Length: 289
Image (tube, rainbow, N blue to C red; front, side):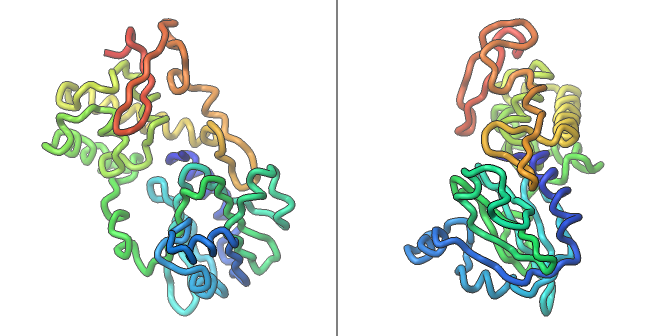
């Protein structure tokens, strides 16, 4: 699943090619329409395909921002509103002149939303597994979970927020891996970067937050922020289906020390896997205590 660095990379590429442009037409796939007919919510959440098309057609794109793992597009027709997008497991945006220009067939076959811009180019959203989301909101408050997200990990107040949450009754006795993957504690850090940060700090993923000193918690937070920034600079990590809007892969996966490894990159010990918060957590039984 794309995490903060991958989403940041998409936002940084969508922004210059879309801001100020108007959406002249919107296409929604038959797959989504059939899902709606069956009472399901594939990709478009709490809005019908026709209503989605009507709302976005003619709107101007004013801003494209990232908040945690979400893409926020500020649009304006008669008034401003938000298109909030989560990439899910395999979502990808492409900026192309034709759907035939999408580089890989697996993405071309699973295009579900196409925004035609007034310059003739397309912003196409492809989602192979259809776990992605799009919501049309007047404000963030229309989808309350957005209001619960922790501060961005790069702002001054994020560290103090992390410490307060990690030491609160709700989290203090939970495994530290579960704590730092919770978006109300740290924004944008999922399984991949939590695994890497804990490895760099030599902390066992199942260690309770209460059994880590405040000094070590501060260092762990700093390691998470550093890894996220490093990954942004590397274009994110491509494990399977992540691509930027030009169809390119990231390279952060080439720098991993633990995620997906069969042996520890530091000491060579065979890694072990434990399930934490429903996710497989890889660690070194020798280095991480």
